Length: 476
Image 1 (cartoon, rainbow, N blue to C red):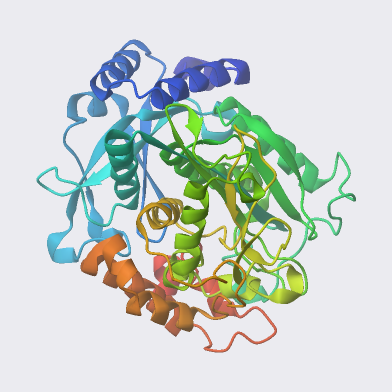
Image 2: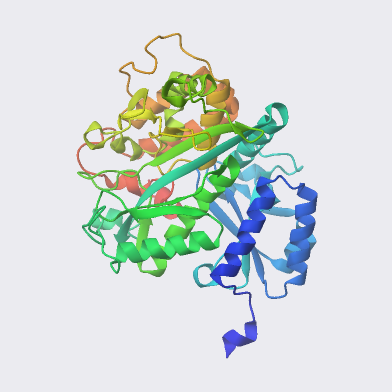
């Protein structure tokens, strides 16, 4: 009886997919922001069954934050949404805590009521200073402005898709309880071919895929991965900011579905020693006027000279940006050559140990795959670093650049040192943001044993940026 009295919005999955795909198409077609804003606000005004709007934003390390605004309040105050930035690690100091949120109405999503609750819609926000100017540590805003600049100045559309792996563990708070238990419990011990249709892993994958489809992800394939209790759920290629938002929603959906099943979806890069870790293979290309600039049927590996220059710039700056691609202590366990680790600073069509792989492609699908990315990387900072480096970085004059036997760091301390010393990371982020990011990573590293050793340590889970909470952090 109480439920029927509320009459909050609950749409079928087919309706959700149709609405989300229509909103996505507007975004990809770059419909003017004022027009989209007017349409969305009218929809919210007219749809009486919506009670709240969830505004999503990202901190400097990549952790997703959500604020629920009452719909009526938001409609009246959309240009004056404030929050306490000092509560977000890496944002403002307590003495300068007030920040604003600007609504990116193009990044609007209808979510399944059975997963996220009835009567709510989601939208991404831009973090702003008090005066309404972009906030320096808003990495989503940095990526969005760079992508817009490339489109306006060069006509470039930056395209990306990721293959984000994760693990499914028993218990609703497996990561947060790790410091008590010292282990993760697998939901099954199968792998690629041994997960049956009705087992917990397969049920989890099926449910996540259904939610993704409803939210306009345009799914491609999903499957258990090589390691036991490991999964990968893939979705379509898209414009870079859309893709980065989708990564955030993908991880949120996985965590929410797992929690509803009494389980934990974990994106630690290497939670269990002795089996393959989780990666986030990042496929990227650049198009102009609908033409894929990476394609050349007569080029080496059918890549254009433009694409190879892009690859060479990333290889040149590989050590400079490694901390952005692998931003946690645990990530460096994954760069282990015994488990197909993509830790060689080379480009190859076949070598799975190469940092960059050249997949088989055609005029539509030609791309490069950056394999050394961990699934806990900040997706906005990751995409910004890869695309700006590929387009604007320098090229080391080395005839063996794509084949030389150089390796990525095997520990976070070396990665931090490379990041701090590099002129290119200053160009990417500026002095202030670069220092802030390095300090956050240094603080996490200093709370962990300096040598990784052969077992996963409590601290590398406890103080991981996707896991930590204020209570645990302040116990140090």
